[in-house]
Amino acid sequence: MPTALITGGTVGIGHAFAKALAAQGYDLVLASRDETGLNRVGDELSEQHGISVEVIRTDLAQRADVEALAARLEDPDRPVDLLINNAGFALHDSLLADYHVHERAIEVMALDVLILAGAAARAMKARGHGGILNVASSSAVITTGNYSAIKAWVSVFTEGLANELRGSGVQVMALLPGWVKTEFHSRGGVKAHNLPGFVWIDADRLVAEALTDLKAGRVLSVPTKRWAFMVGLGRIAPRRAIRWVSRALTRSRQS
Image 1 (cartoon, rainbow, N blue to C red):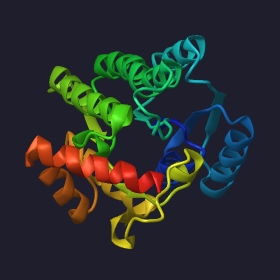
Image 2: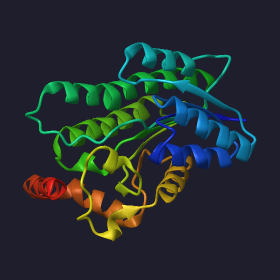
Image 3: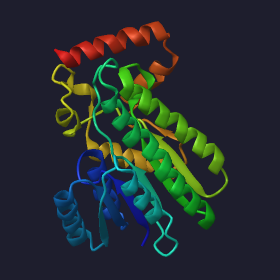
């Protein structure tokens, strides 16, 4: 059976990936800080699908934990066929705030992506096959503070990695989801009650379309036509307009 390693695989989008891949017959390696959640999800998916689930309690803000997870990705005796770099958290702090919260966000959602994707890429390139999916965000095309900046980095980094691995048998893709129905926003203190219903995406649908795009060889995936349109518009709109929209969106989250 193929094996997938998922960071943040116990909740939200990561959990949806875990369920979908387990249903496809993947053995799983789940990494999260939530040891109780890891054991619960691991037991559930193992029982439901007859797969093997390895759980690794990992704090991605701790470099030793990240390096241990990178070593797991490069273990030649236990190959990982698909990496889902999903772990992250909502970040809506002012750019004028104390830098420590931004430092942690860059560590977890940017530097760790580089470390883990690099480890997976080396191992997969040597074997001649594999897949790396980095979860970015539709926020990458707007300017809502440091979260947008980090997710823009993830998107561009992924494209660069895809260039380096072209022809190697390793598929690399960035996922740029819109607003997904998970507890992500409430856990991060982001107020989303003013957003219209049509902007929301079901997490299982998001994951199904993302995995289809990965299989098709896409480098950037924006599931659902409405979000693909909005992200496309964001890429070509004048930057003055993007800044105006970003200010309005930030104000709506604060109201």
